Image (tube, rainbow, N blue to C red; front, side, top):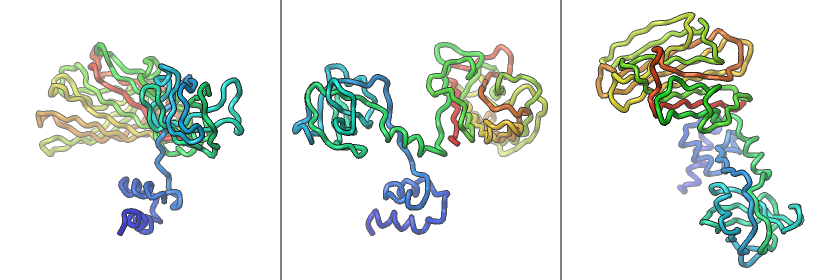
Length: 330
């Protein structure tokens, strides 16, 4: 049985299923069968760069079909990471269907671009020295976005650097990456990889929304310890969600991982409800813990801002602590 035949067999067996294992979904994508099955297809977005423009210094050879060109000296750095699509057209005019060609840049070495010709239905033309070339917005750029429903998009990323910090607040701290655009989503995912300078091994991390520090936060939890014992508890009408973190009393260099998922975070009908997990790894079995949380925030407001900070006043997040926020596109 050939590789393609095996992929096709998987497609037949799983045709009625919309929840496919990751490996099988990748196989089906490779075989080009996901669209046939009516299943979401994985999308790898091209990289982008502003003002990615130059002129052709060395034309392809032969001009209508050559697969390599050189842009003006030093301009290769203006273009994004490959692969990406670019438009090539004559000097002194606007690009039109009659005079422009879209090429796909598959490799870049300094100012030399390796290209695939006649992309997105465009016709090959004789590319000459002095022609203009730019990584423009093409139909592919937009259809990639339109096909991305259900994918996670980075909203915000911030990493503490330089010195320890009292908090990370998406409404105050400029992100390292992400649009900080909270709109047009149906699920919010919050990840925190943190360590505090609290002397305890397992202190708490406060998480708040929209700068609300009123008594509007409720939670229940179950915690498992490394010695196989478990415990449960709950808090109501608190000023924050209190989630387990790693303090300086824990093993050196270990941080805790906290993850919370909030469906309907942009809605304005219900109070916000989330499930969350916190994992504390440690070289000491006494400090190893795993938490599961049921969380509520008594607000019908859409979530547009998040802040995390050590529960203990005056304590700080250690350098390297990170907050990540993703939204699932509606």
